[in-house]
Amino acid sequence: EEMDSLTHQIVEDYQKVRSTYINSQSLASNELPKFARKAVVEMPDLTALNDDLDYWKLVDTWQVLCNTIRQAKQTQLQGVINEISVQVAMEAKGPLELPVKRRNLPEHVQKQLKEMEQSAAADYVEIGMEPVLDFQEILSMEGSLDRVRKLAAMIRRERARL
Image 1 (cartoon, rainbow, N blue to C red):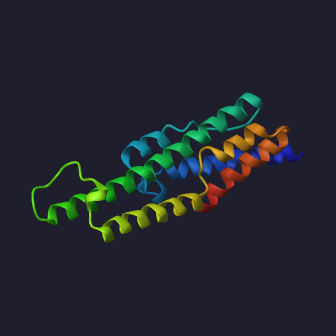
Image 2: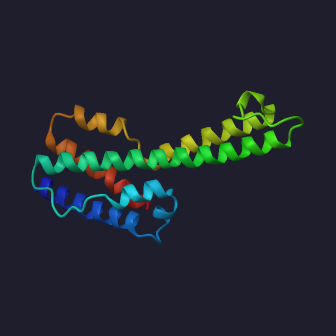
Image 3: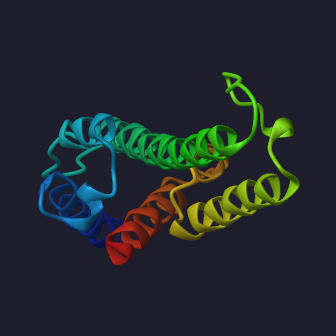
């Protein structure tokens, strides 16, 4: 009974998350760079979780999504850091030295970049799409009901965030 209810909820939540990411007008889609949008558009459709194979395929799909989002966030952050670094280096006296090394930037800029990285890391943890620890927890669980509950909570959290 609980298993049926959980699998139904997983399918419903997954479909909602999937459609939100696929919808090109959605905030979720627009916050991702092009490579990540392509990856989420390719998320498989899901109509039911009939057996263990379906479950583990969904776990794999969800982990790919988590990794894609992490990579997208890292890429966006690195782009901003690179822009700031190059701009500050261009404003400095003397020839522009490429690649720009952080240690050659003024102390206040180094501090700003570090704070940006720390803030981005905290924001990423807050969204709950960590691609390793949750999945290690699933793998370490003994009962299939516990694993299904964990995956359901992960997908529900992303649906609520979106």
